[in-house]
Length: 261
Image (tube, rainbow, N blue to C red; front, top):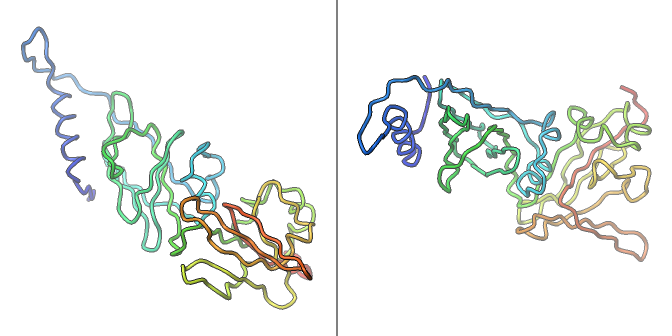
């Protein structure tokens, strides 16, 4: 059974749309029309780590947040002209079109396909909006305002596969996610470490970072410094020097150069 939640805004829109489909006005007189509306062919797409890069939304802060988070595909139910999209517990739902996006959060998203322009009409919480292609993704809730992506052997090639230093010097060795050894009071990760004999690499620029640099191959600590911009401050220490910088993308991974895979 299709579980359409019938939010007030969506119920009102559906009633108006159905009336418009069968009624039309001509010369101030009501005319009953019985012609069939076009078939509903509105598009949906599940986003996850394997296709999020290929569906980039330019200059969109929500896309940047999702891209930098641990993500998985949502559940999508399409029943004729209706759609419902939701995430499992522990994840928040985000939706995107080619030029915009919205955070749905813990709630399910309900929509109705308008077959004339072939656009989904969805209630984003700020009224009804039209989405030509409804793309959904679930981002892991961490309790931290800044996004953090967990990299391990299952997804590292997706994010670093085009990075030359990764392809030439790291790819092919055993990789796993580091252990988080300290959280801050705001719920954000602060310290991480790898098992003995493994090397840690911190990632802040997946496409252009040089992993041969000694700056990459150190244990950084991090603070979420701005809830508005969702930026991380990264710190590491050398004798007499404290290095720090800001980034919206942050991750880390461990490498065992004694093990080929």
